[in-house]
Image 1 (cartoon, rainbow, N blue to C red):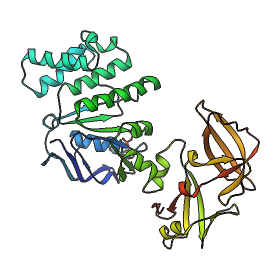
Image 2 (tube, rainbow, N blue to C red):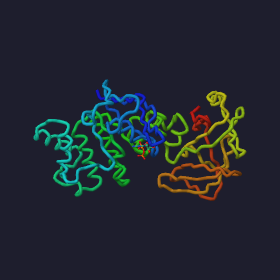
Image 3 (tube, helix red, strand yellow):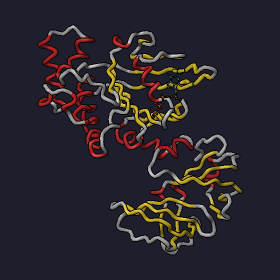
Image 4 (cartoon, helix red, strand yellow):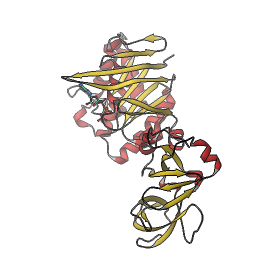
Length: 366
Ligand code: ATP
């Protein structure tokens, strides 16, 4: 079974006078056959985590195990892991067939015929049979990416590691390859850790996503759980595009006062229960949960002026300002809805869609 376990894994870099903790006590269990996406902003420790799993970087503390075997000290070639890099890392002087066979030659003692058969089968799976005699320079970026994948797949490893493998492709190819990778994952069922900073990839490809910030794991959950039930402010702001709207609020009994606006947001007893004694809060609402209504007057309705309308075809992205304040809010409405910039509307923030966080710790309370 290729279960991959990270147990309190830490990586410290000694940078002259400074010590950089690039990965800070990260623990995660990745099931056999699971596709885990490791996501987070630049410098959060994604690549370092992947490189430790691959054996390209030593582990400062903690254990990495495949199944029941701790692999911290197992050399790269003996880890039964195949890695796909952002820059493909194909050998320019070798043909596609030779590139794909190279990994097999290093890690197995199969006969030449058997190796060719594996290469042919993998090339068919990836629909690159026609390219086997070409050199990498004679391939498009998308085709090179397929060859890089082929070279990993042909080895039939216990674990795939992928470091931003689609980031050099244009948007359309990337969307196609996202689907292709999901199809391959369904077909091959190999445990995969996939690093990206692109949250669309994280949301669409991962069985679960692990969100890192500053070397610290913030949440590991299904994409929908991270979206609907973010554990903290960081996850709430990171997942979702455009980002969740945030407002500093101060609680007074059964109302939230939106700081610096004079606006009040009444809250029901069930929300109050979740807030414990915390009074300094952040209210979050996703743009797609903001309703734009005409008229209004409800207790969760606020007059706004729409400043910018971005028609996206299927939907319109709006930027609006609360009346009598300088606070803005992003909203998304359906593409058929006519909303004009410069006009007054009402923004309804339904209580069922509101998230509340402890301002000090960032922890989600409701
Ligand atoms: P990106 O998305 O930009 O590739 P990342 O999330 O993959 O970023 P890492 O490359 O893992 O981030 O880097 C994590 C932190 O460790 C960064 O602060 C980086 O500067 C630092 N770091 C990485 N490698 C080294 C090294 N060899 N020596 C010193 N510091 C390093």
